[in-house]
Length: 323
Image 1 (cartoon, helix red, strand yellow):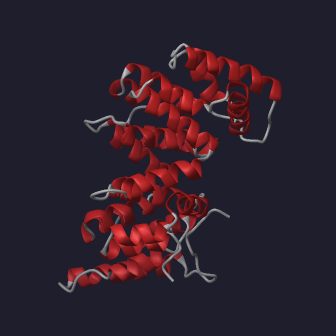
Image 2 (tube, rainbow, N blue to C red):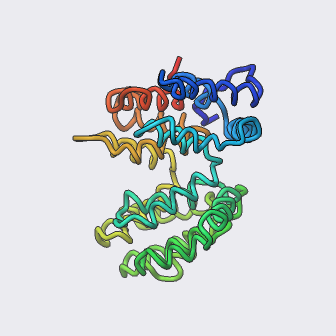
């Protein structure tokens, strides 16, 4: 299993968890401060379906939104991480994408969020994200991409988020060979926004694409992402490389994101939080393995070294290191 969170063998009822959270806020009401440890202890050790039931129980018991109360009780990066974790995963990802599209800067650090959701999630999750996006923001995800993203990138992103890939392991090696040659023609002529390349990367099932990438390397001597790098260093090239990494080896991509967020001076808390929160229930154990290969040290060590306070405690809990 790739999930890193530790859920107790005997989980309290959602009502009891909701009561514990409410008590953790009461100190604030009395001027004594919030019990952050209780919040970490409850929410950090519950899976998505359990967290959803806690939110429902909280609303029924107190006629208040748990998310709203967390927002008023907490602050800083700890608040961001806890609220992101407490959202239902489709709503969380819809909000992450909306934040990206409405930011003034559209660099790869931000736009890769959409690629991660489209290429490193299940087809059903992507559909749920699109539905949540419409419900939350009153327009489709595709409409907002058209409104906010530049033309060559826009074409790729719309194709990726509109797709519903086949989700079973099915590979046709003759198609893999044929489509490897089409991808090679696109990289050779530097036509990275051509219809064939975009169609192949956005519609084929993940296993078929992995076979195609393998054929590409065997037939032409270089990996497709190396050839895309040789086409230039623009935003389109960067987006396509993330597409390939998220399809071919998502755990390596996310280990790289964490490495980039903690290397050098300062920490990119948004990228660090997003990666740990969104992958903790999917493939974080694999991400941790890849991180060790890259850095020869553990991901937990990097997080502990770059964060502090309850923010650190919460991220460590999601990494399964709280014990």
